[in-house]
Image (cartoon, rainbow, N blue to C red; front, side, top):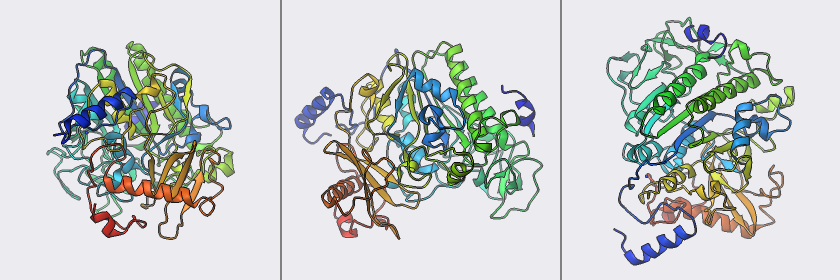
Amino acid sequence: MAPDTETHLATAQPTEYLLNKITTLLLTALAFYSGFGSSRTALSASPGNAPNVLIIYTDDQGYGDASCLNDESKFQTPGLDRLAREGMTLTNGHCSDTVCTPSRYGLLAGRYSWRTTLKSGVFGAEEPCLLPDDRVNLASLLKENGYRTGMVGKWHLGMDFPGTFGERDWSKPTRDMPLDKGFDYFFGIPASMNFGVLAWFEGRYPQTPPMLFTDRKPTDLAMQDFRFMPPYDQLPPNKKAVEVAPDFIDTACLTRFTEKAIEFIDTSAGSEKPFFLYLPYTSPHKPVVPLPEFRGQGEAGGYGEFMIETDYHIGRVLDALDQQELTENTLVIFSSDNGPENTYPERVEKYGHDSAGPYRGGKRDAYEGGHRVPFFVRWPAVVKPGTEWDGPVCQTDVLATVAEILDVELPEDAGEDSVSFLPVLRGAKKIAIRPAMVHHESNGRFAVRDTIDGDEWKLLMEYRRDKRELYNVTKDPAEKENLVSKRPEIVEQLKETLTRIVISGRSVPGPHVGNDTGWWDNLTWIPEDEYTQQ
């Protein structure tokens, strides 16, 4: 435990069998797992030497917030640097959206969130869960294949709490939550802290019921920030108030999550089952609340201190794997849900630290800084240490990668936007087939990237006041020169690619599955009748 932390804890029928069989064999020979060819549920595999899987997910951490990715960083991240040194850095790694809820859905489901009912923005704490019980996701796939599965941290995909706001019965269980999606164990909080229902949930129940109501408290720890800490005002229920447990305190999240994660690792070490642990931290998302022992470290103010604390806890988790002699055959995947919060320009000006690194934009943007994020993979039994790969990878690809590791086949209606990058982890120079990747702003604006004539091109679509933009991100990664008027043939090619991906319901090869809704108004370039005729 970090010094003085104790004190702060208080306060996923072939119709043409032969054709499909040949296709499947061909794709396998190409070392490409596409997740199609069968309508049955995912096959089971014997655990055997299956690796443990640990996914560490930070919140609002930009590409430049890992010191190994930013020579001009104003703070050091030795934990992340260790992952880079001992594993592979995916320098062209992307989240599937640019805000919390849709990125988390994409990571777990291997599918873009805009295919669901969530077309923009994020969820509150209390919503019907965006991830249906019957959709294959990382947890359900791994559990079905013999894993002990756990989640510790921030959920933010919706939960069904007992009763209604202001009239809860916390003696009754919470439903439509991680334990219903394939996780055997859950400890954490329902959503971002500013959305409320702040309590330490273990399983379906809060350890202490959130019976009080409070609002944000002012703080000077970081720019434009706030706190959630006792004593809580007993405000009457209102739209601005959040439900809070009397023992909840924002500064305790990282420590509590880390300790529960280590406990899960320790108890899994003695099990015959491999484990899957999903560890989504709440930092460096607001509120930026570094513990006192981390204050004064680094040269980027409270935000830098909070990243230093976050990195410290990541190091603790990696140490726990070492102590249990689990490091060699544990697949560790680290990434962030989106780029940095919009306070990052102020840090550039005040401290000279650019959380977005060399990229344009941040959280909510379809520019690179909004979705190109730190992405490290460590698996000593397979991955050569200190390696880098600059091919495009999306967090949606994790599902297909894990499925290929297990040698199981995803059903046709799972992992529709997921491409296995296992060949790369094993040393391949490229993925045999890499479909175009779709990016998505929080307001619903679309962008698409694809490799054309050896260069990566990216087209941002028109939406509201925004016009189309085209960038050669290979030659212009900072997206400074808009080539939309100079390369109309590439604009048209990318537009057609994006249209096909949207309408078909999938990026990877397979049958048309469509989306969860009809046409929506963010599809400005697709006539409604063209969408509905498919």
